[in-house]
Length: 168
Image (cartoon, rainbow, N blue to C red; front, top):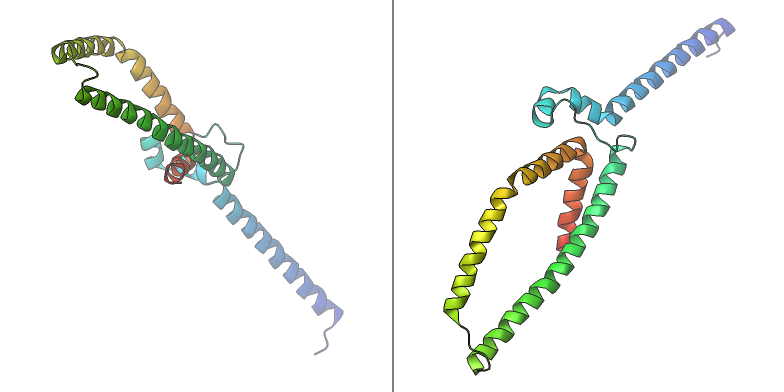
């Protein structure tokens, strides 16, 4: 089939318009997909859950980068928590085991009445200091909650990475 130059020009213009429309549509879809945080912030459930001023501090990074940063730092923290926890549990358990063996062998004698008295005294001091530290703990909790709300993507990555670090 042989086309005249006029028909060819009309088809080229139609193809060009269609290509431009496809390109615009593709950019629009890309913008909608990439801008998930802004979309979520406009939703009523997001505002009810996280507040109107919530938004990531690390907003200059893409969602994937924020998840990766949170995941890697969470994994490192979880792995260290696991290793330090094992060492601490071994030290405390080993110390208690040695004390029990020494007690049963007769190397040491435990004055259980004195131990009970000291434990009760420590409980009272702990309760008193806990009552005094209430406002400070509330402030720390509020700051932590605000940080989590503003950095929900990084926090989600961190939690996932932390759990993976504990498991490895």
